[in-house]
Image 1 (cartoon, rainbow, N blue to C red):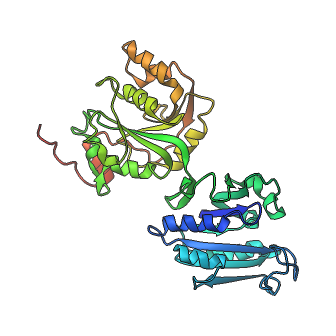
Image 2: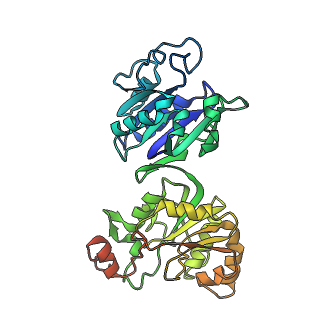
Image 3: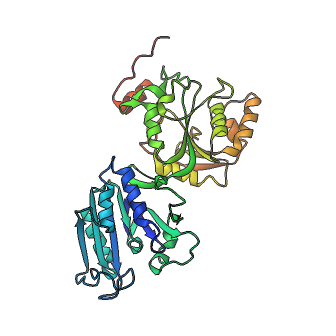
Length: 380
């Protein structure tokens, strides 16, 4: 199996389910930011046999004498699927015709022709037997139970099944994002960034320090936004923190610390699950965040634990159902995150020593991460 995380593979249970149009819509959405590559893979099961799509066919596949043939589409005016991908904005488009016995060999040749770390959008069912893509989608027609053989072989491997309604799909193309060199399905969860803390050790508001050419808060928000359906910022000054481009949720009672920020944002979240981070962790490692959310259904919170035994409740996954417990804890005069965690179902999530997981709490830590010293605090 060839791993190919920057490929989104689209299969179909039958014909005329909008597979190519879905691929073209994805290309349109990403072509402005990336050199998107479009791919069509046609697998031929029998030497000299009938058209793999049924009927007499055009003769192109039945005339294939070599194990595979890889061609590049250069025109975009015909009704061919590959030409439609070019018109949609794909920088390059390839068509791989391959006998099934040579599938792995043909896919390897295709892999060599494609650039790394750019989004690839590919149409095929059977290619899933040789490729492990970032995301594998299967499109089915609503109210139609029949599934063609090539799809039945791989249906159990689909990350998502989409229903075609005749005019669109029950999951839109923007439910799938390309970030950090791979494809991801968007999470039905809310990302929460707590900002506006006192930052005593830093001496100034950490969330507004420059990082990567923008304020740290915006840097974190830009990493999370493609992956989550909703993004919230927990802070008490909407104008100051509007730079994240997300709703700013004020604490129900000010000056109660991060536990009040968590409770206030969870209560405002439109989803049942959420990921919470402080504004001082510059790198959002999405595979870890997704794994924490995946472990959440049977718990109230999933809390990372580093090798030194420390729990990190400000980089963790939570369920909205714990809001009443959090408010009761606060009403009792307790403010620590640990005061909440002692009263709910917590799943410890082992977090190995990783260079990406760092808190910027002091000027020295900020300088080490950016090779810059923080600017002097603004005068009151």
